[in-house]
Length: 437
Image (cartoon, rainbow, N blue to C red):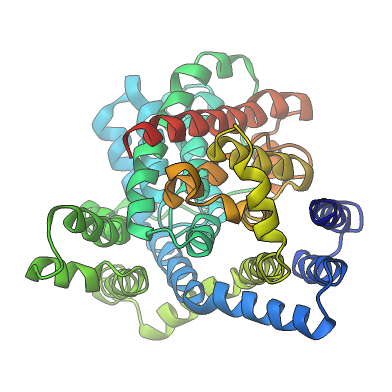
């Protein structure tokens, strides 16, 4: 009976979002109330669980995602992303341009939320395709694959960051393992789709454009790379130092502070404000206005994360989480595969990768730690499942279709299959990492 109630709750969530078109946060709260009351909790108990879930989820997440949005905005507005793209393409040449754009997508995708990265980078793809004469999808798909895997696998993106908090996974370790997974997964798209994508007649949609900054006004390449990758350097170096040193080591004490996700993101934002703003002659009022605009863009994302946290806490408070955990212990299927499968099914039904990942995390939470599986790999498994087969109920599907002037059929054959490829490859990579971790 408890599982049937959870299943009914998930179905209700899907119906409210997809058919009812109800706002996602409201849908999560309604479903949380339904599941909690149906599981026997008093209304006051359900409301307490909802408040606790929202508070626990957003406590540190607000700062990490807020600073992440600010950093991505500064990297985009300053022209740092544009300079990284141009210099890497020039350095590696025409023959390897698709590999170059895949690498660029990984670098730029780390600090930028997916929608921001898409809107900023696609016009640069148009420019590269026009200047080289290469087919548009030939150069575009590798970059978009990179943006997709950073969105699904890597902190400080919303879903992996929130799920890591739910599972009490180490964020630095999640980032390092995520990078080890993201690079080969994104790279797989190049040989799989490069030649195949040439047969599709994609054309830039001139309605969508970003005004490119003149070359003489771009920040230096070193500054651009440093500011984009600083969160990875700070958080990642802390995780590496922890592996090789003990708690009394002076270097470890320093990196534990600078590598704290909140402080790392704050340091990165302050560095970007100086190097990409003040040092280049921008007034503080202009920089502040840009930062405020970036925060406004993540308000709904934070509410979605809060709603998912509420549902997770209701499942825990009602005891259904432990009940599901007991059932799953009897299953012979790997928790990593089950987690991926739950996320993938919800992704196909709902469309949103963030909603899919967070809903799946609440359901499979009792599986964390079972059979020696690391919580970090569970985060990555759900992340991989959450980007499975994007189709007509996903905003990313329509962005790709409209920007590249493709039919729905061709969008399914290119975009949807690319997302499916990186999702399945991500699961395979997680299972391989599980052998060594």
